[in-house]
Length: 277
Image (cartoon, rainbow, N blue to C red; front, side, top):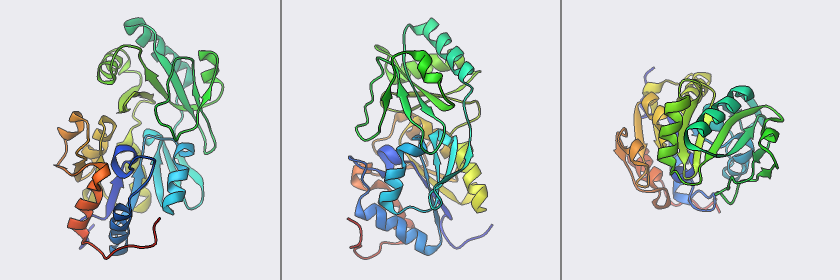
């Protein structure tokens, strides 16, 4: 596939990357993406959040493209409001994985993202939700987490930090499930073979766009597979050191419009946009 564009596909993570505090996107970042789209590039949001926790962001952006959600488990058509692809996690396997991790490090606190466009995030006692904009449902017992199909499990430990919990979990259950660190206090277990790269690759195939024409932006270790798949990976200044180590370049932070800085260099800088709140 040939193109006069520097990249035909722009893949952006949300938290810590495109989004600023308060789940907002700056006018400058919005405008830079609009300019790239007007030139012919496509934009795909690739986020660890499941569909129910990202729809308000997509609606606020007026986003009508494909979104890769749930850490790659879901491909969501924002224009039609429906899932095009979804991978569920075997709940018995998830419970076994949790048991093996706890046998190694002691008690962990767990939450799950349920399957579906209108599903819920369930949290057992002890699990703390650090993101103020995402709805959750507390449940009294761990067995209640398995009441309906899920696409991932989220873990926290009372003493181990995120990096150490991820390392230990991978060493114990890495042959059973995919273990990733998606953000502060967010260590996740997913079905084997499911990550941001697998979800982005599927969405790109739906659009007929290649990895060789893709630029990806991210900030956390869960973006490492996406960077490996894309032609060019851009880490934010606030990115985790594991992602910076594999990035092709580092831009400014999400709060300083790091995505816009790169896209303006590639696609040009437009005039002042006045239609975005």
